[in-house]
Image (cartoon, rainbow, N blue to C red; front, side, top):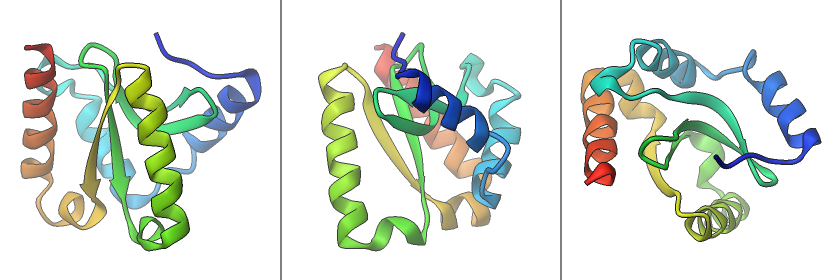
Length: 119
């Protein structure tokens, strides 16, 4: 299992109570275990905190809102993705707008990718 140092774990615990609207909506769906997959929210991974993580599929799900549109954020996202790939974890980016406008399609795509990762 991928985890992080104590300070990252502590920050992840704090962030679990501060989910954005799209994250909160997606979390309510993930709690139902779609496709039989278990998801974790605000999961520590090294020095990073993943929005959602499916351990069985080794998949990081990132809900991308406006905060991910800057050059600085893009560099940070790339570094995170590189670290996760080195740990055998893939990243799926889901636009916040899609979660808000078509939740069923977003969840279906996430479950599909989890299934593909299992082979």
